[in-house]
Length: 266
Image 1: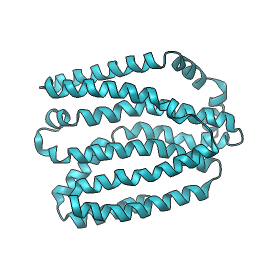
Image 2 (image 1 turned 30 degrees about the horizontal axis):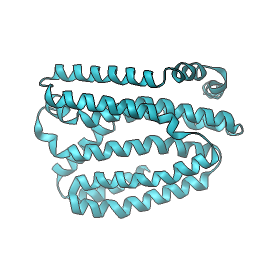
Image 3 (image 1 turned 90 degrees about the vertical axis):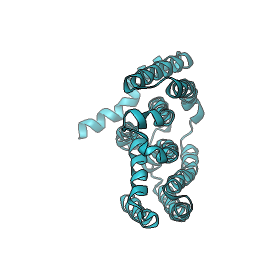
C-alpha cells in the first residue's frame, strides 16, 4: 500500500506539474486525515483481537458491532466538523484565504476517510478469520481502480480531480464490506445510524454558526465546543438505553478476554 500510494503521488505530481497544486492536495490530505489518528489506534488492535475470536462467530459479531458503534461515535462528528468548519479553519487557524482552492479536495478526502473507517474494520475481520484471498482480491480491485481513475481525473480537474478519484475508488469498499457481513452477521446500520443523525444535526448547527457568527479564533473554539455538546446530547438521547449497556459490555469479560490476552503476550 505504501509503495502504491507513493508511486501514485509521483504520477499525480508529474501530471500537475505545479508544486503549488500538489501543495494544495497535500494540505487537504493533512487536514482531512486528522481524525484518522483515532481510527488507526482502534484498527491497530482489531486484527489480533478478532483473530482470537475467530472460532466463536457470535462473540466476534458482538466485537465487530461494538467496533463500528464506537468508531462511528468518534469518527462521524470529527469528519463532519472538518467539512463544515473548513472555511473558518482556513481563515482563523491557517492564516487567510490562501488554502481556499483546496476546499473541494478536503470534502472528497474526508468522504474517503469514511470509506476507510468502514473498510479497514471489514478487511481486518476477513483477514482474522482466514479470508486472505478475499482481501487480496479487494486490494487488487482498489489498485486497478486507483490507477484507472486518478490519472484521468487529475488531467481533467487537477488536484481536486485526484481527490475525487480517491473518493470514487472508495466505492470498491462496498464489496469487501459485503463479503465481511456475509461471514459475520451484524446489523451494520443499527450500529452507525445514531452517530449519523447526531452528526447531521451537529453539522447543520455548526455550519450556520461558522458561516454567520465566527469572526475570530476564539469564536471558532466556542463553536467547536458547542458542536461537541450538541452531538453528545443528541447521541445520548438516541442511544440512552443502549449506550450504558455497550460501555458495560465493552468493559466486561467477553469482549476484553482477547484484548487482555493480546496485551499479556506483548
